[in-house]
Length: 279
Image 1: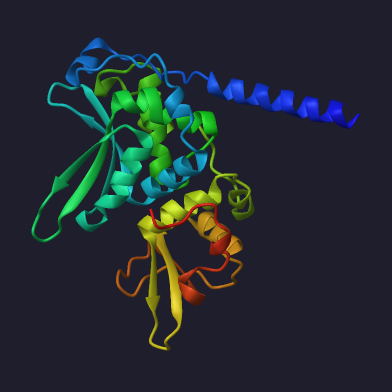
Image 2 (image 1 turned 90 degrees about the vertical axis):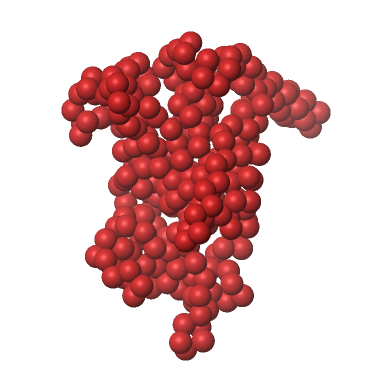
């Protein structure tokens, strides 16, 4: 019986390995010839190298985009639609973009050496979003958790799926169908398989460590109001700390601040996270 069980387990492992190895990522919408000509590209017939990208990395990436990225849908001078995903960081953090670029194998890093605020941006064009990134997110069931980014993703997907070329062809922009539904309460956020890795990426963008006047070390997350999301942080970090709606440095009612004493520079429960925040 033991031999039979071992054989069945080995057989199952082989089947799972082969099924993953030959998974085909579907392209979202239609890739037009002129889009390929711009970058002197061709359609990717084999996407197996992208399927092997760890879901933990993708969850981290989505968390970072929720904080420091955006999906831009704009109108050209001739009325056409352009779509791209941008992650913008201070130039000192360019290593983070290089890490993402090496993991995704798509996108282009641009540097803007402004004297006041030098920045760097990772730009992923529409074709790469259609062929690689968005199909990967759908395959792994990973999605954006802030309302703004969710709406941007839904709009981009709607345009791609329906092959909309002209901006004025977008009908009822406020009633775009959702690809994924956000959790209804804080507990449901914590049950998302990718949530902890998402937090690592989000923390790289919106988190900080600092010392208060009473010498306590604190960990802080700050973003526009997402009540259920921040209540989920409290559950993950096992804290009853009150969520403030204003920030001393940026007193806007649309800010949420979650603070908590952090011993040794690690937020409560942070040692159990699958990914390190040192991207």
